[in-house]
Length: 142
Ligand code: ATP
Image (cartoon, rainbow, N blue to C red; front, side):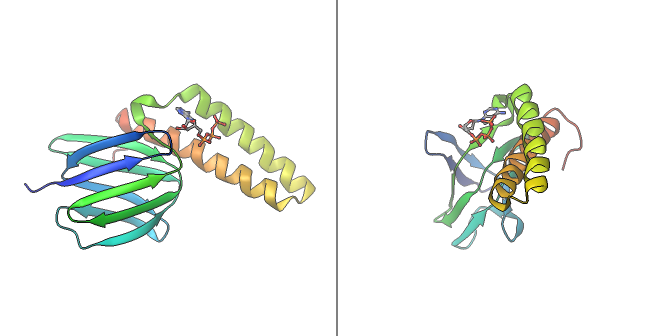
């Protein structure tokens, strides 16, 4: 089966560089899938779960916002942060989730829109990390 080169890049490192069968990503306009020889495109990426398959292997990653470009049988994600399931620190994500939930309540009480938006984004990142770990461990496969 023809494959497409997947690259996931953050400001600090190349997280993935691998030929894959299919990649599914959380686009701002909705989830989308890309396989070999896809037409060129660019898309904005939101916080969420990205997954890809190579043969029988399925990998899950948490990604923060960014952009994706498909060109010449290569799909490149430039993301603020991206973690493979095995690199996610669950305790840290649980603490981040609790902190974000507390900040959301505080921001709502004070009607602070900027604090609220930041806390909501932090909550989304924490939830995405927890979901990715759950899926990688076999719970609720997609
Ligand atoms: P925290 O409050 O725990 O730092 P955060 O959502 O604010 O979470 P980010 O700003 O998205 O963190 O990421 C900062 C760096 O830390 C990135 O390199 C990201 O990959 C990494 N990171 C954040 N949370 C985790 C986690 N739970 N497990 C592994 N790496 C993480």
